[in-house]
Image (tube, rainbow over all chains, first blue to last red; front, side, top):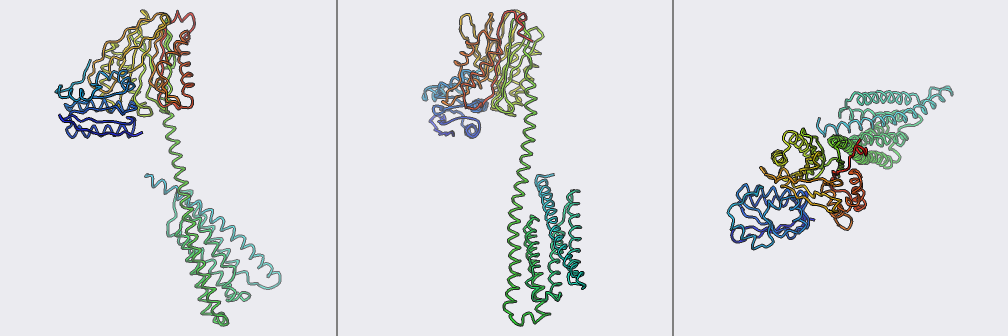
Length: 125
Length: 472
């Protein structure tokens, strides 16, 4: 029931976080929040969350994702999402958060997108 | 008053009550002994001689009087909320143990007993009685003190006998010495054993007091929660709105005492009626507080300016300023214009939104116009969706508690089952559609508990409902 996070530092300054487990209220959401907060505070600007191993994400987990997105964007950084399950994608579609995040299916495409864009701004409608 | 003070006072009361019981038991024993000694003295009197029992009767009477005074003191401390100081407890122990010691010395000087028999007399059992009853002090130190003072009292009497009456040790000195020593040692050990028992009783009493206190706190907490729940439930509309040709019903059931969901309706100045369903992340007290803030902002916002886009933008900004990061609200509002059977529907991250048309037997799924409220500042929401209601058309707004309730096999209730219930009950009143939804999901979930709040709101266009008497 726990959440495991492996960090891969890629050339070009992108950090890929491989998440596996559940992102839910309590310990799990807190682990993700703290990890993202520490990385952002340490000056990491480009973060790609690989959600391939995430079986479930509840509203608290969603809150962590969006709050981290807002805080990283405000610091001039970027947070993007990779490999979401269809169920997870559906949650983002229903809540319209799909339009907020940049979501990728392919890791190399995701990583190269960071170098392509210099600064991210929230996609307000 | 600190928690530890409250607890120590509770223990003090328990200690005083226990002492009252101890003295009560002691008075019973003293009374019995006094009666026996008086009978013995009376018999001597009847036989025509003064007898030897009177000094003992006097001693017992004095001790009984002393215990009555001590008991009065303890009861007064109990009644007035006072306490008994440590020195008084110790002083009382010393005074009480004078009784068996003086009785022994009296026996030494009583001709029919004599010093030899006095050292093995049943009076020794009175020392033991004090030691046993001392456990009711709930204070291990006092029990040990009882043992020490008993041993000292007895040993002092024995030494006095050895010094004043050398004939006692003349024939079998070893036996007399070892007997006296054994009795002293036994009384001393008895004190330590009683101390161990007193410690155990003390711990049990403290545990019981803690438990009682916890229970009282829990009861208080539950009362507060119950109050919060009734206030929150009081915020939900009690009666459906009276709208010509429309039948509206809403229902909410929190997962906890309090929840983060709500539904609402509100008549606007221009004759339209706004219906709203919202879901605050999580449930419980924290979500309930956010829910009431959100409801207040939404109602005030709609009353001031019912333009759907501006309404959501303002609501989002207000909640973004108020809410802790990571907390958010999904909300959908529909502005129903009954005269044209039209509705402007706008959603902040809330879905699914289902619009059923019985004529074509199809569901139209409506997207949200932007993300949930409170997450991102200065967000501009998209244009509201326009819905045209034909007779029989049904709009169903639910919270995800309905969609995500899983059964024992891990399946979600899901949108398909929801649609099926609506389709099967399309000819029913809105209220019935909701109650069918509820009973169907209960059947589906079986033994799986409700983990999230359930809220549903149904808007249905009907033939002239006033003639049918649909609304009260």
